[in-house]
Amino acid sequence: MLQGTFLGGTDTAAATLEWAISALLNHPEILKKAKDELDTQIGYDRLVDESDTSNLPYIQNIIYETLRLYSPAPLLLPRFSSDECNIEGYTIPRDTIVLINAWAIQRDHETWDDAASFKPERFEKEGEVNKLIAFGFGRRACPGIGLAYRIMWLSLALLIQCFEWKRLTDEEIDMTENGTGVVMEKLNPLEAMCKARPIIKKVIQELII
Image (cartoon, rainbow, N blue to C red):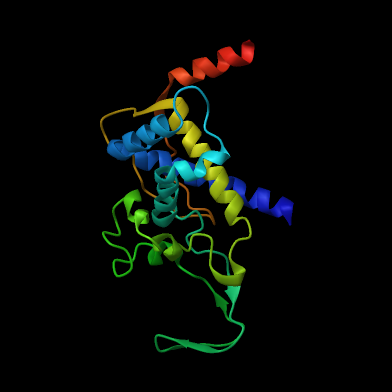
């Protein structure tokens, strides 16, 4: 069980972080807001850690918005219908394999305001995060959801805190999706420039001492 959780979450977490950095590079104002939150709440003397979660809600909202637009498992995992049911006039027999299109649901304009835009601020509204289904929902939701949120949040926070990120050119990062495979990855892997921020030098000096 634990091994499956770790192995199953490795490529999905990595793909989500790649989508997140790509989206931030295309929205420098959002990246700056996240960096300002880190600098204000954490400062320049230490690295962010898991206990800082409640003090950095904007970075968590970036993860939520990334999962909404770029769900790592766009069709979730297959399920069997336990009983016959009727959905929108269609009869679903018992024991039918059911695939949930999370990608379409999380981009539905009737459910999300300005659904096609990358707006982490939308999750400042109470209850908005409950509409996410990137990890499934109900009793069959992914058991690793708590671990996944912590890993992705902390990894993204450290990447923003420790490095200055920049696109290779003035052109926006290509956000085309790879249409094959279970995990939704970018068609063209992210290529970007990064430069260490001063806190890296400070941490290294403290380790040496």
